[in-house]
Amino acid sequence: MVSSFANTERQRRVFSRRCGLQVGALHAVGLTSTHLAKLRAGMVNEPRAAKRRQTSCVFLFLFGGPSQIDLWDMKPNASAEIRGEFQPIATNVPGIQICEHLPKLAQQMDKVCLMRSMQHKMNVHGPACSEVFSGRPYHSAPITDEATPEDWPALSAMTMRYGNSQTGLPPSVVLPWYLQFPGQGVRIAGQTGGRMGERHDAMLIQGSGDAEFQVDGLASDQTVSLARIENRRRLSEQLQLGNPQLSYSQKLVNDIDRHRERAFSLLQHKAGEILDLQREKPALRDAYGRTSVGQSLLMARRLIEAGVSLVTVNWEDETKISGTNTCWDTHEDNFHKLKTLLCPMFDHAFPAFLQDLDDRGLLETTLVVAIGEFGRTPKLGQFTQSSNTKKSGRDHWPHAFTALLAGGGVRGGQVYGTTDRHAGFVTDSPVSPADLAATIFHHLGVDHTQEYVSNNQALRHRLSDGTPVKNLG
Image (spheres, rainbow, N blue to C red):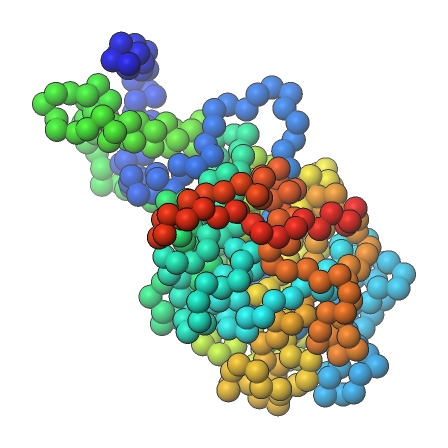
């Protein structure tokens, strides 16, 4: 073993001065071992020539819980306090109608499957987010929205650990933010590695208010001189060579070496260029909409092209700072908010994203999923969880809600599952978050029955106990 390690180190010593400076520069720009550790899972070497395009998934999370009955499971024959103010319109698929305020989506319905039979039993935001993100029932009483070490691991974290990447990029990315209620200290439940370990968290690509993107820790530090960069490079070489004057264990040396290699892989695969939306034509950026969600979906397309397996896009709009009507959470003024803010943003960005994927030949291998943590009450003003619900709003409702699926072999222009006359309960082909998670894993080529050992209790758990929904093609 010593001889093998020494041979490896002799090979590394022939690295050019330029490569050494590049890797050293990663430390100079603030990419610490903590940041590097999050790039750990799934990194591989250069992609093989003539490799089949890998399958991928974009998971658009409609944080807050969109109203199924007002958007894509409308019941125009119900009474006024049920059906609400909106009217259905025809789509480009005969027999399928959706909300009048989604006209662009209506013209893309031949690409979309409306899975109207999603259901679970949790009506509190954080625990419900956890159920949809992880594909498992929440682990305890729903007394907090915040993430805990006992959380089940998120799809993004499980893909980070067990997914594949054909490039030097990680297999799982989250953008443009981790969901977090204002005033709370940590992110909302279900977005971490949880009991599998937060070292498996997906890489976060942050989006700023002007929809520009960056990886935390990669901002350049102009105060670091070239001499300091060179000193850091030499120190790293000493660590690699196991300098007996330094009291570092071989394990630490190996960990640092792996982190450096993966960081260098980001340089090799031009991560900075991938994250630069200025390389896109202004007309295309306008087509997506100059909003956080629009530009995030455009970034998701670039990441999918670059070989990322799973991209989670968390919905973000100006109401994320509200404690009672955050994003798709419409406890009051349900129709005004949908009509003037949420529907226009979604209808601008999501159909453009589907069309762009299709135009580039990416839709065939990319499964697109748009879903919230639950739906809304069939009856206006009905109280189920939040006392903030007004007569003009709808409260939380997990018993029947809709997921939009497209691409990835899913046949567009279909409705999967049905609900009752009030869109309140599933009457045919129920789908649980576990089934949806298993479906995503199946598409990504990840064995959802494989097991990991939990950190908190050292118990073995499957990635998902669900069953893939296979009759969607």
